[in-house]
Length: 57
Image (cartoon, rainbow, N blue to C red; front, side, top):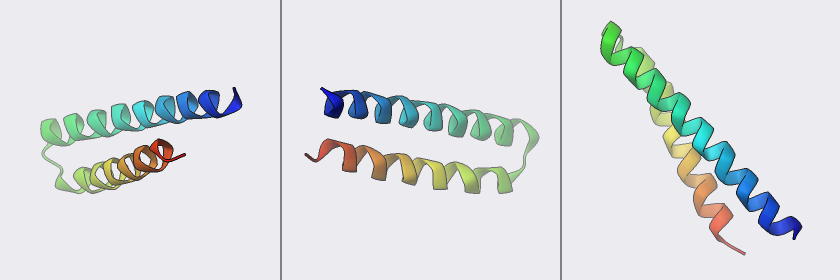
């Protein structure tokens, strides 16, 4: 029971991180600031790593 709850919590955190990354990317495109894309890439990589880890038993 606690394992599935933890997994859904992980997915929620990943979704929030990806949403924030998308928002940063959108602002970066609008303002033309390339430096804003760096944290977006880092967040995407971190979210992928969390997703891969949460998939393992």
